[in-house]
Length: 201
Image 1 (cartoon, rainbow, N blue to C red):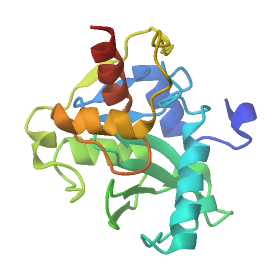
Image 2 (cartoon, rainbow, N blue to C red):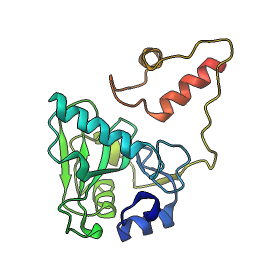
Image 3 (cartoon, rainbow, N blue to C red):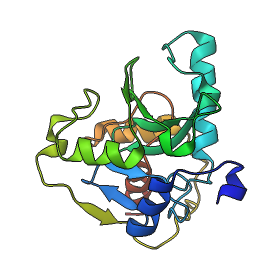
C-alpha cells in the first residue's frame, strides 16, 4: 500500500488496519482501509485525492478557510455526517508516526486539531476524554464499539429505463426521507445506497 500511495504510513495505522479491518467505530466514524469495501472508504481509492481537490477549490474561492496547506493533508477517514479526518503530513521532516490529526466541519468553516496520532485520537474521542465540537454529543453515549463492514464490494446497479439521475435528485429524495446530506461535496455512501434501494422497490 505504501508503494501504491507513494508515501510511508504510520505504524499505529498499520496495526489498526491489521487488527480491525474495514468498518465503523460507534456506527459513525470510518477509517479508510487498504481493503475498504467501497471506493469511498478505501485508502488507495479516489476519495483522498478528491477531498484534497475540494480543499484546493475552497481555498481558491475563499468560501471556507483552510488552516493547513491542502497538499499537506491526507484524508484518512470520514463520518456519517460528512466530516473528514486528515493526517497533517508537514513539515516534511516530521516522521509519519508523529503525524497529527485534523478534522473539518461537514457544512461549515470549523476545524479541530488533535496533537497526536490516529489511534490516540480514536481512543481519546471514543472514550470521551477529547470532545470534538464538530461531532454529535451522542457519539459517546455508548461504550466504544467497532462494526466490521460487510465483505461485499459495492457495485452500482443501473436503473433500467431511466435517464441518469444527478446528485440533486438524490439530495432532494434524501431530505424528504429524513437523511442529512451536505448541500455540496460528496453524498454519504449509506444515503446513496438507500436511494438506490428505494428506486428498486
